[in-house]
Image 1 (cartoon, rainbow, N blue to C red):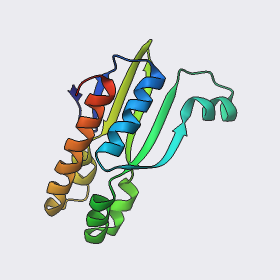
Image 2: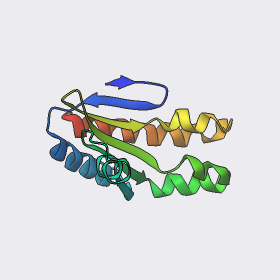
Image 3: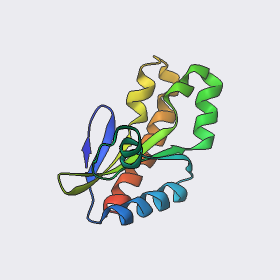
Image 4: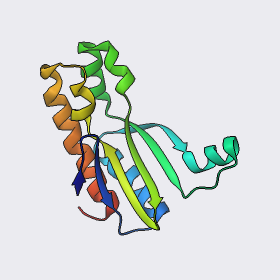
Length: 134
């Protein structure tokens, strides 16, 4: 798995639709709800008449963690939800999830690091499962 300052990333062993379903399953199994889904491909086609490969954003929320962070720092809401993306790039399906550690670091609240670490580990597991790992 590749890890950047903003995301966990892995190429999937599966097609686009199966990877999306595996991401949904992995999120649910780890206590996340999906607040929204954004079909970037369809949106850009409609708004700009641009053709692009599939790209889906799943806006996921781990409610206990979101509650904890928002209670401590209300402005953290602009960093939520935790986005998971599934896209086709150069013919390969790629799944990514945001790294909460990177997002919450901008708040300069070391007391929130354990929450970010916990959610980050869950999202890393989501990416691994969606892409074909366990």
